[in-house]
Structure formats: structure tokens, C-alpha cells
Length: 339
Ligand SMILES: [Zn+2]
Image 1 (spheres, rainbow, N blue to C red):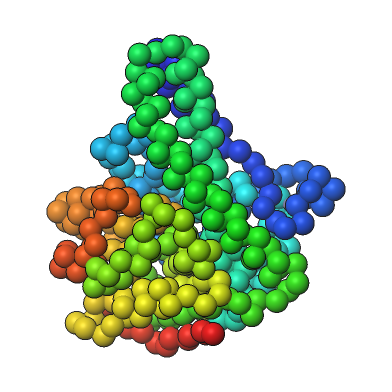
Image 2: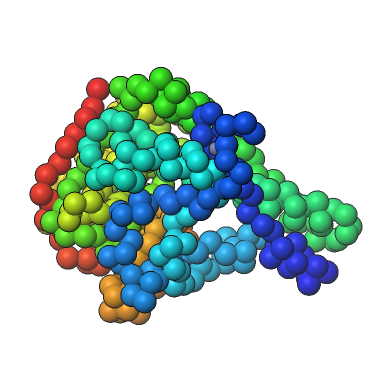
């Protein structure tokens, strides 16, 4: 039984799809490429040693229990941050503006990057849902005593995925329209340029639960509005580190979230962003050199952040841990584009 279940889990192959708004049998190329969520020239190479960076890769062991620990693992830079979410034709065509050129703080570049971060989130959620359903089908078919127990524990989880999927599908429809009409006026962002490359890079989209001071912004147990989601991209461009927050339409909560992180006490911005990267995002990559030099105590604290999830997240996660993980990044400039 255990062995069979393992084979269901480990035999699971990620699906291949194309999320381009024009995707169809006729319009897509046959090949689904490994689409990068952090630009190919976006700096992962700055984090690597021997072609590898560090990631807390989501593992199967955490599927049945939230106690399952995620472990840091080396991952090849060519594979890191990729997902099978675009055909090779649409991948190279849609993201050409900043894959073949430098990234600019324009609504178009930010909008396209926001779209890609969102597609990655949708992809991960769809894949998780598929895998969970496979496990449930397997347990049901095997009439296992554990079935009732496990299905009861998985049902709310699946309902949560379904709710998040329907919200992110709605947001994707809006971003599809931006792309189809080539109109990115509704994209808002804060782009922060730093004097050094950041020790971590990531790409993702979430609805932040709390601001810096522990004020609740979103409750993920209830349906959210599409503009409650915020995309975060941390990468490198033109010899600077980049921290980019972006969202669709007017959203005061997202402004509050970003502005609270940027409050100028004690040069803490870099460590707040660092904590956010592990609290909120799976698609986070760490510099090998930096990781190797971290103390075991700091590594354990980071691992704990990786394991936090909606419902158990510390409202004061940005301030209750005073640990200095990274040296302050000097901010070269901040570009805000709000409605
Ligand atoms: Zn396509």
C-alpha cells in the first residue's frame, strides 16, 4: 500500500500547457518549453556556484501533514525557476521585450512580468490539485481505512486551492486583456533598485496577510478580490538588484504592504524583504556562497519561515525575528507608478 501510494506520488509528471491568451492547437508550437520565471539574464547566475543555487523545494512529504519539513537543495540554474507553462513560440514572443533587452520600469514590462508570475502560481496550484486528486482516487479505490481520515484532512485544503484558483483565473483574464489590447494602464508598481545584487531572487504572486506592523490585510479563508494579489519579482538588471512589487488596479492594501516594508527604521528593508521571500514564496532561490556561510541557527530559522502557511503565519513575522540575515542593500532609486 505504502509502496503503491509512493509510486502514485513519484510517478506524477507535471503537466505541460501554454497560458498565452492566444494559446490554441493552431497558434502554439508543438514544444512546451521550460519557461523561466526569473529572466534568463535576470541574475540567477550571480547566485550560483558550479551552476547551482539553493532552493527549499516543495516535497511530497509535506502533502499529508503540515509537519513535513522542507529541506534546502541545490538546483541547476538552467532548471531553477522554470515551469512548463508556455509553448516555445509564445514564451519567446511574449517575453521578448525584457528577455532580449534590459528590463525597464514601464507598465508594459512590469505587466508582462506580473502575468508570468501569476501563470506560475496558477500552474503550481493546478498541479497540486491534480496530484491531490490522484491520491484521493487511489485511496478510495484501495478502500483503505486511512482514506476517510486523509480525505477529511485534504478536503479543506482542496477547497482552499479551488478558491485561490478561481480568483487567480479571474485576475489572469484581466491580464490576458491587457496583453491582447497591448494596454497596461491598470498595472501599478513599486520598483526598487539596489546597489548590490540581492542574495535571494524570486518570482511569485500572493495576497499578503499582514503588513509590517501585524495589521491584517487579507484573510485567505475568505474570497479575495483580484487586485488583492501582489506579484513580487526579485532579480538583477543592468548591474543593480531589483525588487519589484506589482498589482492590477487600485489597491490600498498592497500600497500599505509595500510602504510598510519600506519604512526607514534601522536600515531594515533588506532583512524584511529577505523574511518575506521565505514566508510567502516557494519560488525563492538563494546564493550558494551566502547559504554556505550562514550559521546553522539562521538556516533553521529560515527553514521555519518556509514552513509557515496561511493560518499559522505569525502576524508579526517581519518584526518578531530580529535576526540580521543580510547586510543592508543601499537603495539607488525607487520608481513608483500608482493610480
Ligand atoms: Zn502557446
